[in-house]
Amino acid sequence: MPTVSVKRDLLFEALGQKYTDEEFDELCFEFGLELDEITSEKEILIREQGGEKAEGASDVVLYKIDVPANRYDLLCLEGLVRGLQVFKEKLEAPRYKRVSPADGGEPQRLVITEETASVRPHAVAAVLRNITFTQERYESFIELQEKLHQNICRKRTLVAIGTHDLDTISGPFTYTAKPPGEIRFKPLSQSREYTAAELMSLYKTDSHLRHYLHIIENEPLYPVIYDSNGIVLSMPPIINGDHSKISLNTKNIFIECTATDLTKAKITLDMVVTMFSEYCDEPFTVEEAEVVYPDGRLSVYPELAYRTETLSGDFINKRVGINESAESIAQLLTRMCLRSEVSGEGDLIQVEIPPTRADVIHACDIMEDAAIAYGFNNIVRSTPRTYTVANQLPVNKLTELLRQDLAAAGFTEALTFALCSEEDIADKLRKNITETRAVHISNPKTADFQVARTSLLPGLLKTIAANRKMPLPLKLFEISDVVLKDETKDVGARNNRRLCAVYYNKSPGFEVIHGLLDRVMQLLDVKPGRNQGYHIQAAEDSTFFPGRCAEIFSCGKSIGHLGVLHPDVISRFELTMPCSAIDIDIEPFL
Image 1: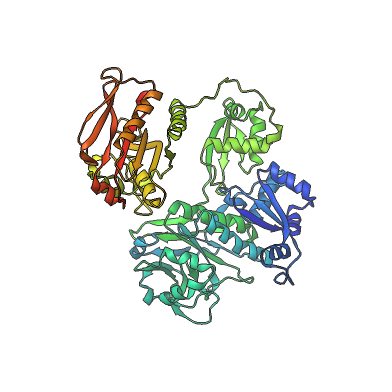
Image 2: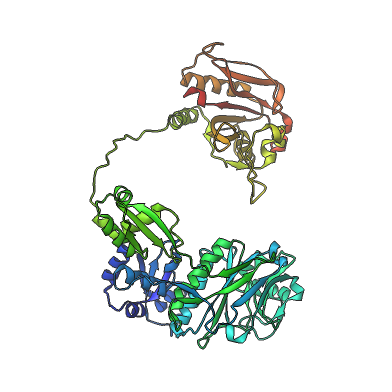
């Protein structure tokens, strides 16, 4: 969960009321938050860097408040105060408006060129007019951007925010992409101009910015935003230009968000402008900006979209476990910044979702807010009407019983990765990948995790290879799921519980593996026999040595194989001694 640090005195001043630490802790709990820590800048430095570094640090009391990860509207002092004031019914939730330029002129325009398609194809923009900053407001403005970058923006990979003093630049603005050698500007906090390539080298040692370099450093083109005079506003997602930096004296702010995810960009822009539009001369109004796409489409931002959801009071009552009237529930929701009213039809409630509540995507989210406003501690405890007795899944119960007895038989259990490389389940086992019915990962992070395993054998052989220096013999087993394609399933694949065991020694030890099979069948109460029992018969499998492989049948159905592994399989797993293995399906015995 994100943690928001706010100065206690500043918070209480904004709330218009002072609280004891215990009272504020209780208020946070009622609102669905948690007061995580009460500290100060000096205490933090003493704890993290020692007493010498803390000399001269502030003793101002800080509240560290844990905020739900999807409540982007609570990531700054302004949103936190607004939410608490509405919750305490001291304030009505404001209505946010998008307006045209006051002088009747043309809106600011951001033109996107087709070169951006390969790096960050989306952009949105807006203008905050006649804003008044104080030192605290300015710091909160910067901190909100950083919180959003770490949260919804996913460390700038999805969205990067740029804020600029509009009085120092002139539109229309151009968002394009160029080779790093062709981009040259003076970045924030630097004294001279650098090319983009030089900046990437410069920031490799920067404790803050080096974490974002990987996003574009291997791209042939870097994104960049220019104004009509060719001045660089920013090189997203790395750094803004020094020319358009904002300060305490800034009155008009041009905000742009470049992104790989347009939806996240819209939400991010809405959050920034709704939180700080209260400091404009006309509070809670945001000047629109136009964005022109490479195909000629024109969009106007910010959207600041309101939408209405309709749900019944009975839905909320049943799921929360309360018995309130529709009017009472509407009032509860209004306290959570969701303006609600009862429609004329039965107990239906119309709930208005403001642009600040991007976390509300389903009726269940509205129901949760109603429960928070009602108070979890006020919900009467009751016995569930449905009487159920928990029980272990049969396949898991069988697995646990077999694990105990295989360990008693002298085998050591291994737990291996459910994902592996294509080579592990195909080439190394002397099989064709198309015959394995493997489920492939669409975007594997490494070559070691390309597919879901179709056999437990590769994992056990890799475990033996990693433990070759251990005393012989090595006797391992695993009972786990493999994943197989299955068109009859709604997801196109199914899990299959299998048992696999291997014996690695100077001699193949086929008789050891055969004996293990007999013991497993004895435990499963399956007697030897061709019809109602189990039996083995000679078979050919490319993974096993010719003439040293048998197929296992139970009640007339094939359930697996056992035998001596082929020398090629052993060498491909970097082993040097013979190895026998058994691999069977245990689901038929449920």
